[in-house]
Length: 254
Image (cartoon, rainbow, N blue to C red; front, top):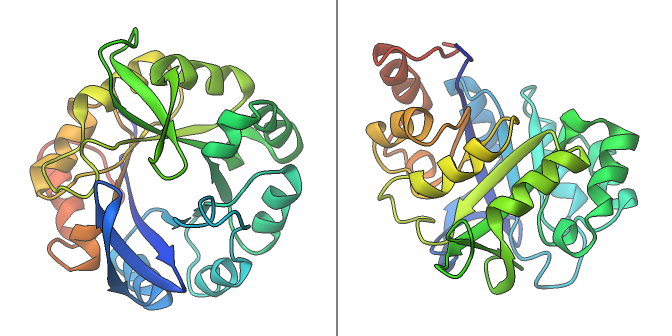
């Protein structure tokens, strides 16, 4: 049995942690360094920072955010948003990230995945893929980019397989249909991705109750469970989630 990991996510805008529902209605959710340090104390296995407006604002990831957050934690840090070249990836890793997460840039230039895996190692390359339901796609899910604003007419599951073939070390699928709703992970989407690849898959978007985390593993096939709102607003603690998963028979690091 593989150990299940908990990964809080800091969605960043203008130097603050923010949260939205279905990728819109953005509200302030606190200071990134305070959250990061708190989550490590609580037992987070990994942490993610997503610069949510970098792509839409056509700019790079703000490296000062990476440096400030990485300075207060020792757990692995994944950074995404505004990463569009091998130089960007190296700069983010040099600023303190352990892994990079790319989405729109990988769709635009798939060879970036090969280059990043070859130069930095697959274990440092996460591809985030946002999807939404579309019955015209073979898998029933269409790939969307630019922070969920632009459908690209490609099958999301086929793209997941291609990412694996190109050397990605982890996949982070987020369902636009479930993001921020606290109705639970989109298990159908997560399972479609996890069944298609042999990589660790991060369940993302919609966790609101303890049971949702368990379902993400058992029904969704995820190995890493990402959540934001429930942790930022202290609805649930990481400790609570881990103890619950352990009680349900899953392996966690307590």
